[in-house]
Amino acid sequence: MINRIVKMEFDPEKVNQFRELFAQQQHLIRNFPGCLHLELWEHEASGNIWFTFSQWTSEEALENYRHSDLFRQTWAATKVLFNAKPAAWTVKKQVSL
Image (cartoon, rainbow, N blue to C red):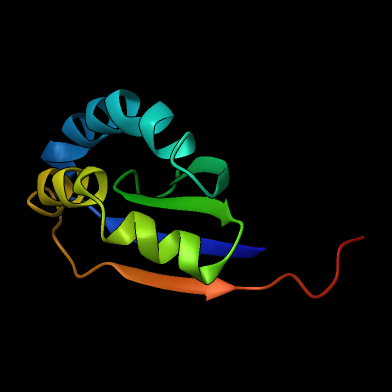
């Protein structure tokens, strides 16, 4: 299993558009083959920085999603709302207490 964290910074005036888009797409993403878990996190102090946290069965499952029509359509609608370049990390849990 792998974990994926994506940091996104939005134009403050476009945050609500992102929230609406995520609400529309979240169940499709969560139910994509290989997706085990999906969360949306807000950096409350900024109001315009958001993170997605997702868990996938494997790198292959994540790559299948990243090459899917669902991802292409969702990402195209999302990236026009950014005011900074997004950052993404694929990480593995080492310790859980």
